[in-house]
Length: 271
Image (cartoon, rainbow, N blue to C red; front, side, top):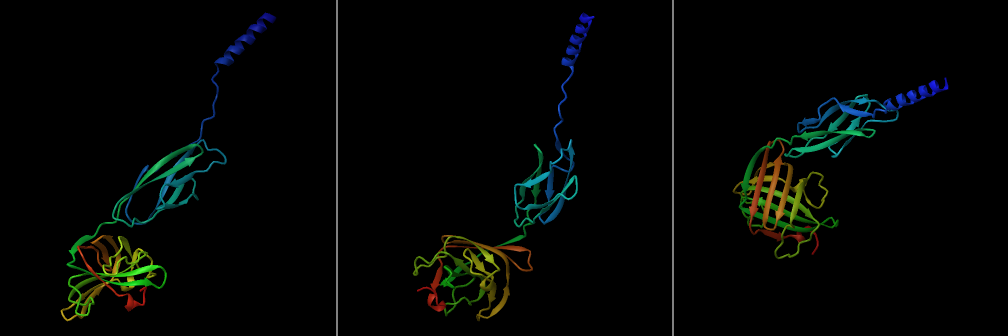
């Protein structure tokens, strides 16, 4: 009897050794919306949908973008994540990745946003580049250069009202003129500034404007800028701007020597 019982124990041990060991199935997240998302250039809202396999108490789904222009993630509905995409302010497309994670599992979603539709380009080579240097601006350490892309030279008073078109730019820089006998706008990029606060690296809306004059020096038209950027590289100038109520981009260029008059005494600036 004892022998029979021992044999039974051996058989049970062998059977137990052959039994597969059960393992806990790991949690995972599965995407049920598109993994490649294509978006137009404007601001928009969207939804990512997903399912959780073998959920675990205390685990939460998290979405993280590698750019700031995808934001405002909303987790208020189970299985859905809302998000906001900011408008693309450029003409070039841009790309981003959003990573969804749940516990140790994660997946990625690729986003591509179109750039703005580029408007018609109008290219102009200005025959003259003129300027006035007014020196210090309100004692805040910035220096004021007034630049004009012009169809004509100075008028008889040294002003800008001779006939033709004029692109006026009221520029501010941290750099003071190095040579008052040969004043030059410092190299760099200056952007249109509707705040009118004299910030360095900008040109102010208040005195930056397009105007036209007749042969008698009378103003016959004007247009306000909407956006703009001036690139200065030595004696090479490139102005890109748009006007209010127009769907065109104007590219105005000038290359060569130019005349900038020293007007510090006229403005009460630095002498």
